[in-house]
Image (tube, rainbow, N blue to C red):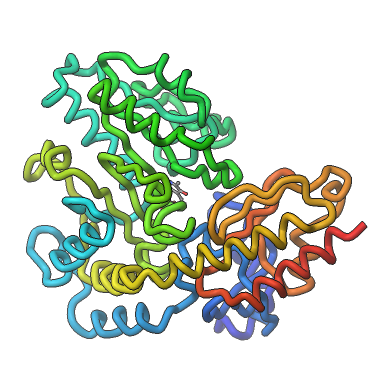
Length: 401
Ligand SMILES: *Cc1c(COP(=O)(O)O)cnc(C)c1O
């Protein structure tokens, strides 16, 4: 039984019977992708406005990334951290230089980078700040999304991400996102870190009030607290800057990156930031079999070099302005949130109900994600102006009264 003899329905049946029930994929079976386009197993083409939750900022199979992967596949793919490899150092150095940070700790998934950030923050609190052992707190924002591990869901506000998975990891406090007063009220002498997405992705592309991130930085400075920016989704050119915090001229102490760090080719994440903070992790205190593997680092290095030209950031800014203008003009749209080529499009209730909006977009050839009344628009940053117009026209048709 070869894959190409199966119908799309066969594939979905196989997935339902033999695959785990973790997610509910949209009923389309993808078999090929190039740039901003994908093709399903029955040969239909779709414009991709989903962009792999920002893991596909470079588009599907960017030629420079595929070339780097192919070259590395013919050399060595895994050294483990038991040995050095010749891709790790160059990748860490160029990623640090790109982001204006001092040190890089590569890992595999975004969740792993977040988990590592929490470990580092806690240890820093005990060793440097003088917090009594076991008392360190990390403050997070409501409606956050930082991943799915036990510790991370322990501070999720999504009940369905948590229900049935307890007991949870203690040591977290939640405050409303964008509310500096609430944050000030929550900081104590035991606060190790404030962990935030500079733009909340899964919450619906929520940009905080102007000045908020500057105030968070100030609060962290005043209270000797670490600022951890989760840029797994909003980072790496998605908002029009290399890091979303760059837009505010703010620097975090630590950042987490993932998703597009390897351009959608394979898992690669990193915790980056201040060397004096990351050095609280002693040799042998932390590690991962595949973290920093030469294949991922080779692809990551190629991705960093693409970002270093600034071209994708500029595309995101310019085309993002066009995207936002067009979406704001649509009949039936009540609000457009976001920054750069990234939009949370709130749709009027009467245009939403029973509309099967994403199904009807797919019938026209556009793939998009929706969540309770809003569409998420996050095309690969290699998308063209004409393709943006094509996609927005399809949204307009589906929303038309
Ligand atoms: C996706 C995401 C994560 C988790 O990344 P995984 O690779 O799925 O573990 C963490 N933070 C943010 C902001 C994300 O969007």
